[in-house]
Length: 323
Image 1 (cartoon, one colour):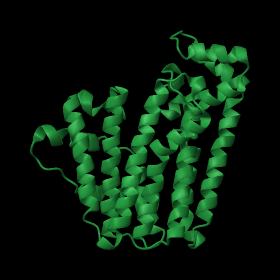
Image 2 (cartoon, helix red, strand yellow):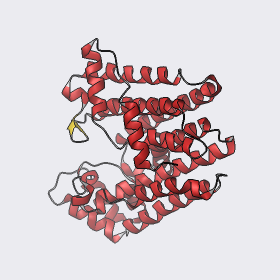
Image 3 (spheres, one colour):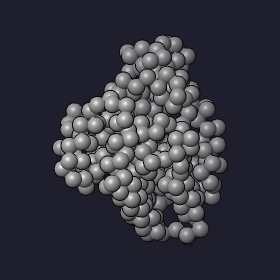
């Protein structure tokens, strides 16, 4: 069994061998640039952890993990274009560094290379893995579209159930599918693979709540981002939608008005409303609710408890993080 850090290192060694053709430079240089902006690579490592939970990790799992990482980066390139984001992980986004057409094509090429990697796995797994991968890819696109739709709506018209669905589709399902695909290649039963999927899905939901909490209530010196960045940009989050449910009519009117202004004291006033609604306590309870569902599903996976140690450790790291 391997820890998350150990599998991060193993994946980095393996993924370093994934190369795009040298020509045309204008297509593949932006793709290589995107992959050089390394994140934590949680999704591909979850695939390896899913395999490791049941059996020794095979080469096919590394191929699927690489495909997951390519797909994830494809979505990030396109998301940055849709969001008109100038920076990704502190450096210029692909469309900013190069140009919009090159960024689009680089993302497209990543997606095609992801499918080529999956096509190389053992035929025993190919049909099931391809089906999960395709369904997940569609869900991620649906989640991104819902996110864009919500950006055009008034915050008080967005139902919490709809927002939760968007987060599940945009963020959680890829975490869940990564675990499930790894589990399948480790020989897991359908029941075990499905419980692992639900574990990943609800850990993803809890992770998003924690992210929103840190943005508003975290220590910016630890979080590494601007304090209240979501509030200052008018982003619709768990905290905002729940605050609109909990606050009184006067506070609701003020909150909706504040989210549309650039007043210098906007952050302070919004935080005052959040505090009066005890929105941080609600969000903490919601995070724990999602985490409990996740852990209940992991508990149902029929392997020795000792084999679940590193997944439990990772869940704790993700949900207790301050950065």
